[in-house]
Image (tube, rainbow, N blue to C red; front, side, top):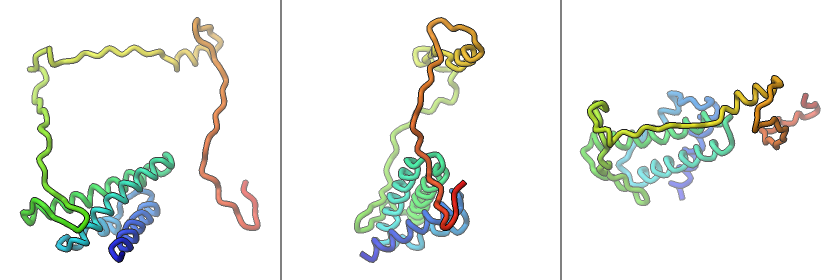
Length: 176
């Protein structure tokens, strides 16, 4: 229970600071992203869960909209930075695995990646040529707005409902 409360408090503090800094990872936030000790299983669990919570936080902010995109990106960077710190710790200490009670970090081989130093030396059987055809809607709209007829197209007015963040209500005053 103490670990969970610590996890929630630390994650909430990182999120609060990211919001206050408008998505910038400040030196103060950076200090919170560096685990103090990974020798205790409970601390490893907390760091692993913090990554999960920060990734989840990134997804929540992304869903809210573009106004929170910077915070979402910073939360992802924060999760990656914690992950990098754990990776560094393991490399520095010659560890292939560190275990918490709930989370395990293991070194794994990545899938082999194709490396092509010079594309010009590839056989043409491995080269794809793509042709993209699309309608120039912007030009059609411009021509129609200027009064030029475009066969097969017309301007059509529509409406949509837009969700916005509400302005806070002023006590004893009015919103303009």
